[in-house]
Image 1 (cartoon, helix red, strand yellow):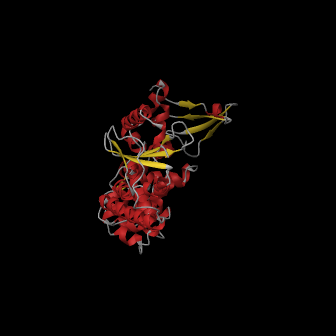
Image 2: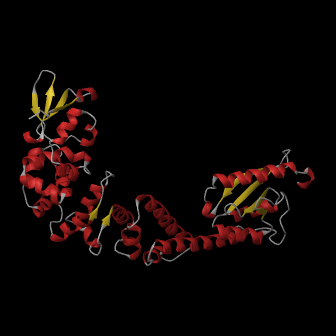
Length: 381
């Protein structure tokens, strides 16, 4: 057979040895090889993914010596992959475990990442005994929970969340008994908002991908904050009764509107009955907010805090415009009478302060440039 032993040049990384790895038929044994030729048996894992070895013929030959199904099963656990494969190469039970419940073998390696002998002895035990030796719950329910996990282990914290769930002192995983699948989002939600685990809303959130999950959790945090701010008795109770993410967004928006009303009352607005001065001409789908009621309506429709500018508007220092197309936006214009052209676009904000598109900014710019051309200094007070 072609010699598929490989050498990892770790001396280039500052170590005083390179690492030599034998191929699968020689049980993947690893050695520290020092400059004087001395070889010491590697007593743990590598801490890196074997995917990093692709691209060199020698490394690919070495990888080809490993059964493909073992490589596939171990690949999600990049930090422990080599040690998991070494265990499978040296222990029948470890190979069986890698095929059936690879996460258990990863947990063994996480516990004994620098002690192959201890990892080997642990891997020889039955699965429930392994859990027990790891200080985890060793019931059949714990194994069922492991089988529900739908994780890709792209995040370093995933194994930590699993360990937390299986901790024998708390057995938190039991709260997922009615889940068919437990995702990373579900574990994160249980960590940050455990009162939602098992609820309809919790399951709805858990079905979301990571990018959507982050947005939803921003809604969650803001909704609970809003509840406290507007004096809701036990906001958590209101949230945990919701059925899905859509209900959460609706509750959030309702509480935002209530907070806006409270701000209207608190800011003690002046001259609310007086129409706002007319400044720039309407055009390009853009029209000026004409009075306090119109300003409040804009704030409620767009769910942002533009209404707090009323006193500045009434004093002649600010103007607000409503954009209908190409997208719904609110435009804030600051006014400085000391400047030759006293107007300046200060903000363009969409629904819930959404950032305007490039097209919307272009339309605002075109409108503003047109206003400059027709500007008459006497228009400003």
